[in-house]
Image (cartoon, rainbow, N blue to C red):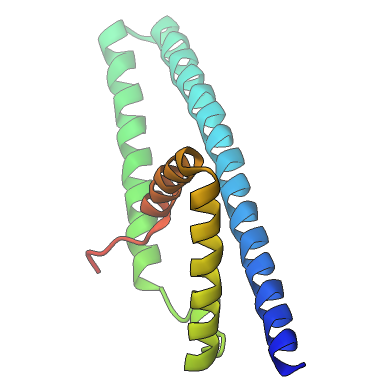
Length: 146
């Protein structure tokens, strides 16, 4: 009875983890699409600003005004990113209690068995999933220069 309840607990934790990862990947995909659309809108805004400025002044002066505005925007974004890096404190993940060694070992063993069964069922899909997961983790990991 004790082993059965342990397996149910591990299964629930793995399901929660799977749902959490799925949610994060879906959120990142939607945010990427939103960022691409916003970048297109920004490009059109820069073009419209240049065209409006060109009616008021010469083309080189309008281009310099647009370049100066973009430079200021870039400096503001860089300052925000640099200041954000200094304020890093305790994250929600580090605030959670750490699991015991036995819980970690049990979850690792169960996850290994599950992954091995999935890989033996469809090795091609396993390779594609590993590549996709590597790309997502590579994009999401924090900068190691700190």
